[in-house]
Amino acid sequence: MTVEAAPETVRGLMRAGITHVVGIPDNTSGPLFHETARHAAIRLITVAREGEAFAIACGLWMGGASPLVVVQNTGLLEAGDSLRGTALRMAAPIPILVTGRGYEKMSRSGLGAGHGVSLASLTRGDVDSAAVLTEPTLTAWGVPYRICGEHDDPVAAIEELVARAQESERPTALVLTRALP
Image 1 (cartoon, one colour):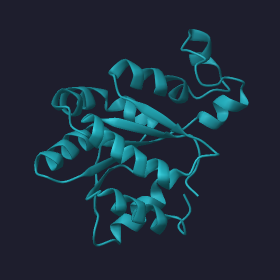
Image 2: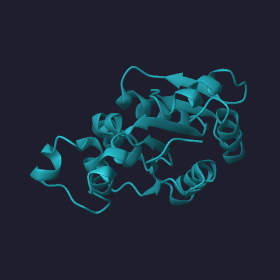
Image 3: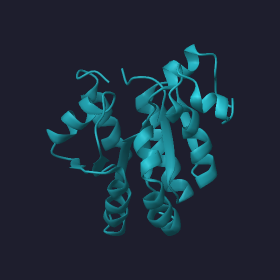
Image 4: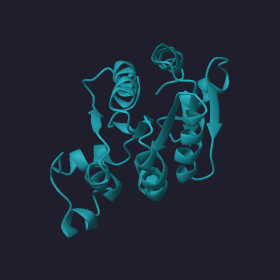
């Protein structure tokens, strides 16, 4: 995401009714965090560990807020027990924006979606195993997800993510395999 695009994304979050952005910034989400910190209508809460993001988001939701969790896929993997033990058990409609580290490398290596998890795919030097594990992990946890790739409008996809989480009354994820514009 470029700094210029961050205001557009924040406007999309406002249209979707997001009140808080909770998580840890990375290279892809950093400009979103920067813009959210400057914005009066959406509160930014940065956490020390990704698992905290789900606990805080659930608390906010219980208090009537509409939080968005933003984590890199590596952080999503770290946060599994918190996601399972809070958001999933509570059926909290928490939208999760997952930035997909390693998807470009995985694509260049010839591995694509649905390739599956194997010892060979996890140990290849030209592949980031975080990308290999992201989708199977979301599936195993029962978290519905959508991929947002190069040909998708990420702001529209984020707005759709929020609506899907609220409609399904459960945590729902959007995996960005691209940079935000």
